Image 1 (tube, rainbow, N blue to C red):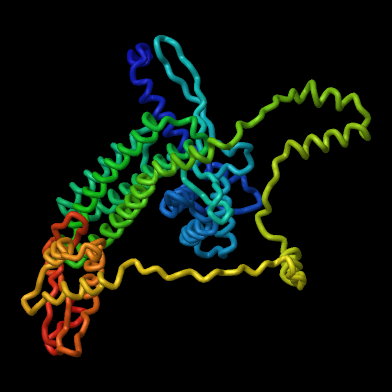
Image 2 (cartoon, rainbow, N blue to C red):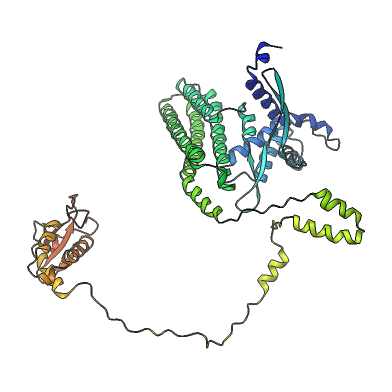
Length: 490
């Protein structure tokens, strides 16, 4: 036994390596289980490659809100199976794909978990622990149909590590990609870019899993310690990743423009497409993180008014099984039937029952009751139309606008003159009426057929310095109608 084992050193590294082997074991187990299928001859298929194809497809097709569809994953795996054994029919390829997908989902077990026992030695003692994980799991989609999501352990199978800091590995993946692009090794950079894309998906899944607890129970998370800290760190990390990947993308664009070889532009274009997918996923994750505060407050309001669940613990053996065994079957059956009915939660049907749908659509609408005696016709009284401004104010505004000539007069000067108007009765809200008139002249110049002129207002980027109004200090001028500017230029 090594000195490191005795002193408890490197136990974390040992456990991590054991977990990595455990995560890869269900994938490798497909090849071992293949000969046990005595009714089918699938010896020519490479099951590990098909399993990695399924995990890869789910990883790339899922996003922050939704997962991958079963039929898309089966189609992708069946396509690879057809390349492995092309002389078999498409039905067999689809059967192989479905078997691989069911095996990765661990269909047939109660909780669909894979488990492995590992140990940690510390201070001269050895303790066993159980490592439970999922590779693929089914979740409900927006339409109520099942969707597939890849776990962090499944993505770790693709990138070759488990129990690591995903953000640090993503930084390292971008740095490796940048170094390869800078040295012009685009063939090696292509694999590094694919790894960077998988790290982006893995990081988004890590954030989504951390925030999922907030939706289940708002009391299980603390805003300052858990949510806000996670949001701040993730937003800073995503901003750095967007900046780094945008720089790599710009370098690839310059490489495409300056390259004289035929292969380099094509390879650079493939790398740019992968980087654009990384940037798209980062932008989507960034948008979701910016809404975390609103979602947290919404969950607080929703869950505050939900009454706490009432739990009554039932001893099935002493309170149900033993009394039921002492009863005759005729008496025990109704009791057991009632218990199962109450203990089983209701389930929404996956599809609409077609006969009920057709019967509902073919049913004639109910006849309306012609008796409208209960409907009371409202009586509307005539209301007097009260003008906001008086006639003398309109006259005062007209006299102020008479000062406009070909040189123009500023709106600020007109407002100052309106507030110093001699008639006290017309001075009240006169500046508001003047501002409305000038604003109307800005959008639609007003002709004066009697004098053959046009009164208009233009904006020349002068800021209005006024204690009441803000915006552009419009220039009001009067010119001959023939020389008036068009509304589009205004």
